[in-house]
Image (cartoon, rainbow, N blue to C red):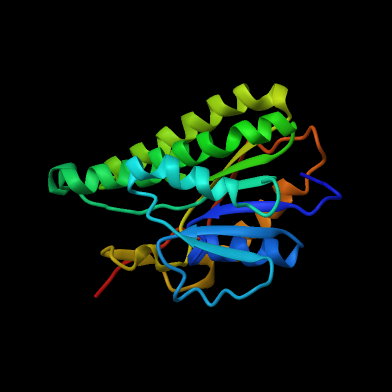
Length: 239
């Protein structure tokens, strides 16, 4: 949202991949950023306007109190919330453990709902702000070996659509960005990955640019959803 004040963004999953690209892009654009992640040890982030808070978003019971403390200690009121943290566990349904099923749903959906529930009241009260969810092409179409992962993203999309209707009168904008394959460490523990060509995967910076476009849009204009896909859909099995 365009503003003359010092904007403040809270970004989950800010230590690597898409979240790290968004963090760096917003810092370059003049935002103060509070990043949430399990660890920032390998992020390489060092900026006077950046504060990294280490937190396990999958531990849902402890989240409300921890997030309330984080909100209280923000240097300025939040103007942008970017819900980005996530995990992928792929396989045929009968191959997935109950633990993995719960982890995917908790981190990819429930944690975002709880984080948003914490920061949204202040944004509504101030009559300004953006809530952005990083979804996936898996939120648009189911896929083989992606039953639980797709379910978590479908849930997030329905949540975002409902929240958008709830927030419109409060001048809070809600957007969901659905990328296809992105060249990040997301595929590190999976048996497949995008093809090696540049056209086979999205660069995290492309998504960060989309986030900044959403935030800089004219007040009153909402990007409901942005879908980004690689030019060529090529997948390869890992050796």
